[in-house]
Amino acid sequence: MSNPVISVLFVCLGNICRSPTAHAVFRSKVMEAGLQDQIIVDSAGTGDWHIGDPPDARSVEVAEGKGYDMSKIFARQICTEDFDKFDYILAMDEENYNNIQKVKLDIKSNLLHLFLSFNKAAGRLDVPDPYYGAGGGFDHVLELIEGASDGLLNHIRQRLNGVPCR
Picture 1 (cartoon, rainbow, N blue to C red):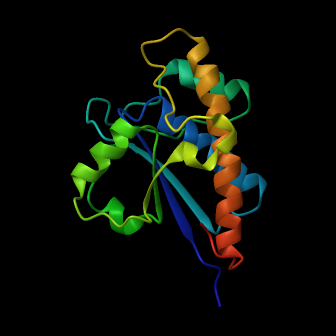
Picture 2 (cartoon, rainbow, N blue to C red; picture 1 turned 135 degrees about the vertical axis):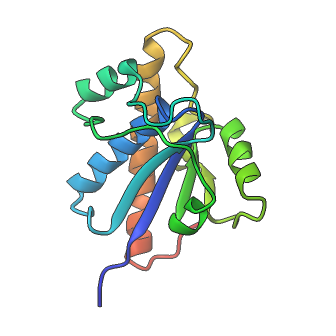
């Protein structure tokens, strides 16, 4: 019997700041846990402005400063096929959560989550968009994403081990 595979898609607006950062951080944590054969990680945006572009240079600088590789991540837009392909679609904020629901009106309720719901210590549910803000916003986003990635990985480990999840 083969191991079950869980697939995770992180989604923000343009797929150049928050979701590729989450993609890189979570992929790194999956690899550290030795679960790369059981967990597939990807990212997308709800908008089409940056399709094919690499992540924002400020996101790359902050992520790579903490050892996260973003070199093979390129922006793409979420599509209807993603709803069949992924077990978790994780929105970075409420605006993108609502935009995702517009892509597929009959989305299963257990599929779509706000990513920060996996980081109870964050005290918030929206990962702020650092694109137009000062440079420190990228550091804050990374901290929020690291915490949520730990919570998500714990949640998925329980699922892989047959423990009922919330």
